[in-house]
Length: 186
Image (tube, rainbow, N blue to C red; front, side, top):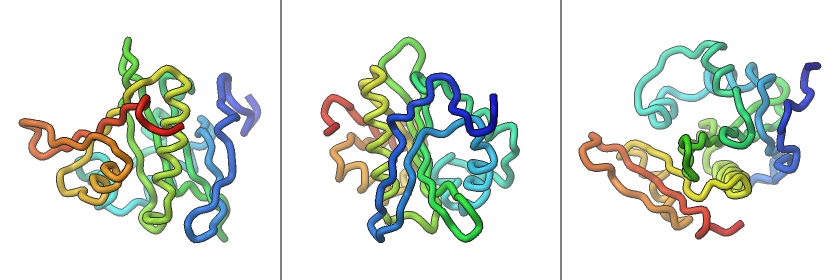
């Protein structure tokens, strides 16, 4: 497959340019296996606290093979969407949302992370909007995410959009965020 050729099933309909709250042009699109270097730079650029908030534990290094596995997508049961911007150093990934369908169900585990310097500009909201639209089109009815109890910013964000936010019993403080796609605006 030539570099940058869309893989089979690639959802070109998700590609678009969106303007962040500060006017920055942000390209939203599904990620591809050839985005491994972009995703690796993105992950390595996250602060230790952002990584902890996202993964629920501390990680000190990320390798290419692990990142490549994140990009093994079939665009139906597994999908990742990225927010990309042009910077002086070239194209940069500044946010990612993803889901993975729970086998044999109409539910999917989901996650979202935005680069520290880009938080608070609406990118997470736009990535979630894209992800929920794509999930709904692919027969997913519920998306489930988890976060730590001290991630109050994401709890408030989720509640603002009507998502169900509950502390998981006996979890040591994990919070479950559930999105019923039938009740979210397309």
